[in-house]
Image 1 (tube, helix red, strand yellow):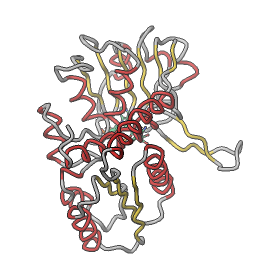
Image 2 (cartoon, protein in one colour):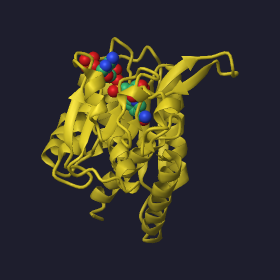
Image 3 (cartoon, rainbow, N blue to C red):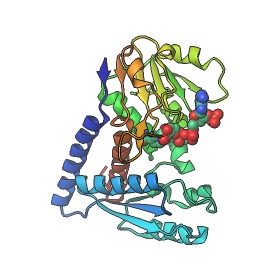
Length: 294
Ligand code: NDP
């Protein structure tokens, strides 16, 4: 059994990005710039935004976190989006989700210029992804694809079962893995909360991807011997064993499942760091596009 270290893989990708950026700076170009907009005081969102800013600095990007008050209105947020769309010094930006309930998330996502939508959530980018056209692929699915590719995992002809069909993880992953490309060419089964015989279906997977948000849901008896298991789940589970008062857990019961599989990604240290790195990759792509460097 091999543990796929998202930490090690993302370190390599960051080194590659850093080298590329340094080459552009040597040519006299400015740094790539990523902006994250955060509305309110949601704890995990603050952690994610801080991590994104830190990642940018590590690879030589400029970055900025725009922290808006919880009381920010939809109109105010839309005017920030407009400003960022028009700011030529900003290559890409994200509006950290979830947003306060009174703000319509779809309205905000639709207002983002698809060419700066480095989260890849805009319908134009989802459409481009589905058609295999250039565009931004959502960060977590892109991170999983990199993980499979860089770990040398053969996907062609394999049966891939994805548990969870969300717009940001399961659905785009199902498209990417079914595409006629490498990695890709899988036979994909996309499952969800209404799926019958989930256990049986999971047991048939050569590649099993868990993205449902239920800690420890995938047990050893749901997994085929020798399968590849990718755990996307991140849940905070209360504990009194540390000062934070919580542990981060994935959707896979790692201890029992890891004995049976050929590859498994851990949580933490698996898909999470790959997701963060994909955002950098997308930002660099946006930067290169604006300077015609492709
Ligand atoms: P959502 O809540 O948006 O979607 C969950 C999906 O799982 C839904 O499609 C739901 O089905 C399905 N589901 C729920 N319960 C079951 C069940 N018992 N059996 C089968 N399917 C089920 O979650 P996200 O996709 O946003 O996130 C999933 C997990 O991934 C979370 O833990 C999240 O924190 C984590 N995550 C991790 C990231 C990373 O970087 N590692 C990035 C993004 C998310 P239905 O559609 O029928 O409701």
